[in-house]
Image: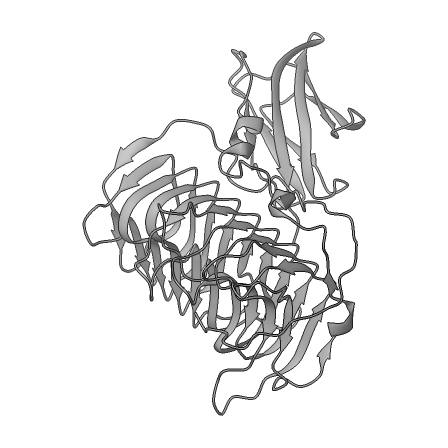
Length: 410
């Protein structure tokens, strides 16, 4: 939301290979939804799961509003045509939003004074604003503590159909040493017509212990990734690109804009940027010089090979197509969770059938094989790195279940 007004041209252009950070971004849910009215809980809605719902709210309210609630999972849901924030959290604890789809919403998630907020593997198409104040995929305000994660989401703001501000904004929020606020592996595209919005804003109104890594920002408006203050913030290994537009300004910048708030302990390293500014010059990096010595600044790269193709043409719904089950099984197997954030998956079936589970990588190399001979079997997936894998279940050497699973580790 903080606007950068200074333009600096960097002449260092290095050739580096272009590749995507692909962890199966976006929702993997391809099932049906049940229509639901907005859900509003103000106290004591704890240890619950909200799933499989489609919620519209064309009036001025929210689709889901939780206040003073804890241990709630919102999964496999769809939110559309919301004139305000689709999901609003106030003073909540341990809320997970995953495998959901958001379309034409003012903002996706606004969490205020909450902790343990996870927004993971969701699809968001068209943040509508109006700006300022709305137009974010995720906006954390005054959030604190460990367990706050904004990871592996896809957001596509289509020009002429959307009005985003900062797609991700971290405002006056503090992670902790050893468990910072994570913003990892997100695919973000599209910005404007706002002249102040961009991809990822850290340290807005201060804050600390924020970690931004492996994100891709393409044509996200005024800027790609910015920092407006705070301390102990890391921005690492991101890719940032923009074509020239009427609002494009700066790719990556560090500028403490908070009067009276000291900014320090910044790590900004190994980021690759090509940002074509509205002035017709390459404007990749800017250090305003008021955040102390920035560790790793010299390792950032002006990469002339970057272009819009660092993101696939289709980033919304692509993971759903890959992960819809092809099963014709009458055994009614249930495989969860997917994505896998822990160290295992659970296979349940009302009738044990002496099945065989096989997990292979994209090259077809078998990594895990285990017999499933009970109604509930836990499969240890700790040996698997982040990524998407093929899971097959066989009965009498015939495939009865085949799907993709996504491993997402912190």
